[in-house]
Structure formats: C-alpha cells, structure tokens
Length: 240
Image 1: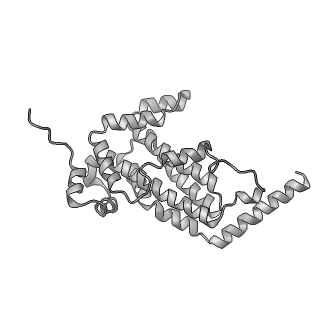
Image 2: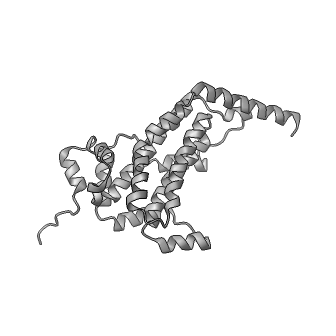
Image 3: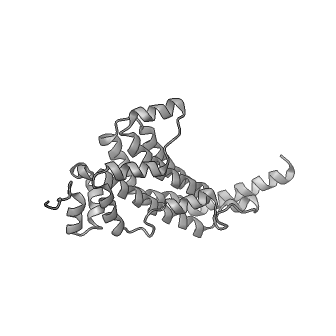
C-alpha cells in the first residue's frame, strides 16, 4: 500500500478502536436484549420442530444476530443492516425448507435457484391454515412501528435512495455516529418482533408446546379475547 492508503487504514482502525472502547460492549448487550425472544424461538425450533434438513439456515439466523452485534460494537451500520435482512430471508426459508427436505437438497447439491421471498410468503399464506389471520392479529397489536421491515432493509441493501446509498467519504467515516447505531438497534427490535410474530402465526397450532417466555410475550400484547382467537385451530364455518 502507498503511504496515503496506510494513513487511511490507520485512521479507520483508530476510529474503530475509539468507538469500541467508548461503547464498552453496550451494542452487544442491546442486540442480545432486542433478540431475546427470537433466540428463544431458534432454540425451540432446533430442539422440538427442526427435522435437521435445513438446520444451518437457523444457525445462519443466529449468526446474523451475532454479526449485527459485532458490527454495531465497531460502529459499522451498513453491514449490520445487511445482516438484519439475512435474518428475515433465512427465517422464511427455514420455515419452507423444514417441510421440503428434497427441494433443499437439490438447492444444496445442484445450486438450484433459491426461492424468492414472494414464493415463501405465498406458500405460508396458502398452506398455513390460519396463518394469515393470526399474523394480522399480531400485526394489529404490534409494538414495532413498521409492520414488515423487509422494505426498508431492501432499500438499504439495494441502495435505491440517496439516503441509503454509500457515500464518498474518508475511510474512517464509515464508522457511524452513536445516533445511527442506535437507529440500527431499534431496527433490530423491529426485525426480531416481525420474525417472532411470523413464527408464532405459523406454529400456533402447537401453542401448548411453546416455551412459557414466548407465551408470556404474546399474552402481554393481546387481550384475552384476541389471544383466544389467535390460538384456536379452526374458524367456525357459517351454516349452509
């Protein structure tokens, strides 16, 4: 490297070190708290529901949570946002491929095209029984601001707008401000709640097998009437 490049890298390292020392692990603690229920879900899925065919997708979700925590500890927001979208994509993919081991083996062995999000969502809406109704109940009683955070994450990943596009700036300035990192922590909360709601709506028929912490989390958001509507297995059909 040239002397100029050496200087730029040194400035970046110094900025990262300053951020890490200043934060003292706070971003890791915040992300751990923000994803507490999602991590409980991942553990539950591994031990009770997974057929092991696509388990590394679940591992990928947990790994992406770790990446978000690590990136924010260093002040690196853009790669943290990419890891947030990975959480969304891999969770939906695992739901599908846990029931489609043969298709997943083809993708793994033959590099078949990975199904798009629209296909995965369509599968859940068509074959998920009361999935759509349950997700609506949870969405109407959400604590997150954004009903589905995929759009805002995709905006950043594809850099469609000026606000989300990478900036031409000195290398050390890719270390973002405390305020920007705090926004990313909030976005992790949004993603985690959206995913736990999706998992809850999909696996609601096995409500009685859920860890109590997950039940308590939903119960705190729903009235008794809505909780009963959410947890019932079938709608009563009108008489002909």
